[in-house]
Length: 135
Length: 384
Image 1 (cartoon, each protein chain N blue to C red):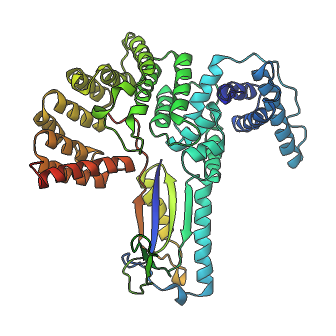
Image 2: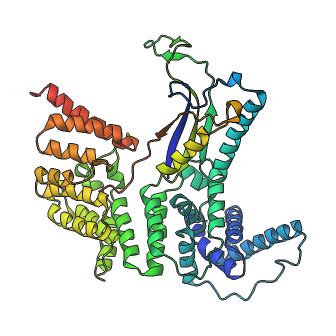
Image 3: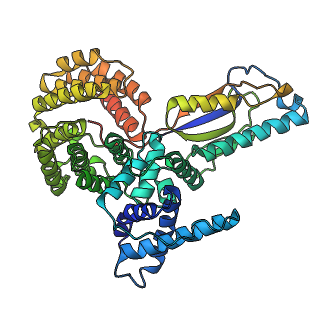
């Protein structure tokens, strides 16, 4: 029983095996990819392992406080930012091994030519609440 | 109507339906519906025989569902029979339900969810909320678990070890929702200890009671952790400690030691010390020796090393720690603590910071970060 975050990157992850930008795929390949992602989420829900998932727009801005009584400052979007998150999924699984297995399946989503993208997904454990018995 | 009383009737009623011929999954669904109806109907008029009422309503729900299913399949001869004469609920039925819900074929998460629903009488929504997952996900987890155990015969003798492990998980990794899972784990373990008269069930109950006794002292109002040595022992619940010690002593007297009794004995020794300085670390090390012998668990060895550091001094603790795998959870935190005790603040500060990065939960990370920060201030301003 541990929650993990799967992060999909637009940029910043090592290069995928089948590294063709999505706008170069055929419409059927795009549809097949989206169907795979939907079915993956639905399957995780049916196994009782799905918590949440969202895709993110690549557009965004950085925001910071500019001190008391002043409006926050925004900057960007930065086209050249090294790391860009495309989306995320949270899973609740029995083991780290299961989390790796699922990340591997998600990474095998079909891309150009109908071949698996084999992209690098980032797998991060979510911090839990502390156990009662530690001594 | 006390919801806890209602919930405590759940396993018995499921067992009655199963003995009347309902399969476990259908019986469990029917009882859930009956519970929901009870919550609605009982405040206005509480039945004189709550258990009889639940059995009647649950059986009707089961028949309704079976008829709907039968007509859906156009096989209406199915499930129309009147119930067989009722032998009356036996204690064994509830016990069998514990075994079924913690069946070894289930993953720990599934066993926990199924136990909380079928034995604990919690709703799917309450369980989902407690474990911070969507209700649909929890519903699927429970439904798959029921399918997994559907082939298990209700009369098969079960494995108590897996039941104890599931209850331990509910207590130890209980999240906080509207249901107090620690209290729920204690209730279910108490019932199990009565049903089985097994010394390890008693050992687990004692362990839970002794740790639950410290609950108020374990966190500050801001939610931060208070280590055992710094807890205000005046806030420990003496009634729970007394009960835990009684339960433990009765179990130990039967001379069949197990890991939960050994863990409870360690907790009892901590409970026995009026101040942290009075802790009998020598005896605690001896109990950890027993625990290592019983379980061969690397976590027990790690805790033993820390206890040895208290009993024989930090050098002895560090020597024991050096023999263990450094990738063990809390290894770095234990190393940091023992180095500080040994007077090496610079190494301890660095290790506390490392341990904070490795922590698997937020309050522990915050605690370890504060330890590192505290030592770094001392190192920067040694005269203050």
